[in-house]
Each structure stands twice: as structure tokens, then as C-alpha cells.
Length: 152
Image 1 (cartoon, rainbow, N blue to C red):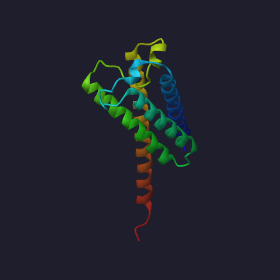
Image 2: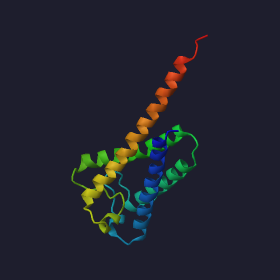
Image 3: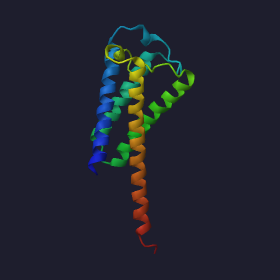
Image 4: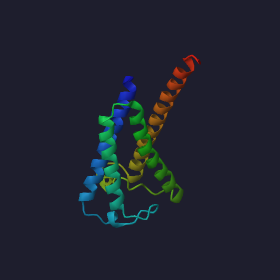
């Protein structure tokens, strides 16, 4: 496995761990926003943060333990595709609305909620496009290998 792909998988695992930790920390804070319903899913933000932090931790564990590169790319692609789809749908509802993806952790950072939302969207795109390219590369390598085999 090339170094750049190993780095991509490892960096995706670190991203998942950090965002899960931020969500879990937000869940420990008393904040009314956690009890509001999400505009897309009609479930409380608390439930969404609980579910997504569990998903991210599980994904990171799989990435750190997986021996097959294709499986790692598929895990990253599946998680990041959900994040990208959610953000696109949220943007369709209200383009100016920031994502409450980390709960209130963003309010403690020296960056606006909109800025943090853009950064998190960029991270989701990094994971989605990187895993898509990784899967495409593996597929093309397989097609080349199969096309070289004799047809007897």
C-alpha cells in the first residue's frame, strides 16, 4: 500500500476520533440545543450526536484494525457519503444555517459557527473524494490485472 493511501486512511481515522470526542464532550454539557429537533431528521440533536459519535468511533476502530485497503476505503466512503449528503440536504433547506455537527464545541473555538461548518464540510469532502479515488484506483488496477490474463 502506498504511503499516501496509508496516510489518508490514518488521517481519516484520526478525524473520526476527534469529531467523535467533540460530540461526546458536547453531550456532557448542559445545553438546550441538544433537545431541539434536527430540521432534516426530526430527531433531537442529542440522539443524532449519540448515534454519529458511535458511528465515528466504530469506523475509526475498523480503520485502525482493517488489513484490507478496499474495506477501509469503503468504510470511509460510507461514513463520509452520509455526512456529505446530510450537508447538501441541510444546505437546500437553509443555505445560511450552520451545521450543529459538533454540538456546542464550536462556540468555544475562535472561529465563527459558519467558518467551522465550512471546515467540517471540507473535511467531509476530503474523506469522500479521497475514498472515492482510492476505490476507483483499486478497481482500475483490478481491471488491468484481469485484462492481462489469458482467455483460455
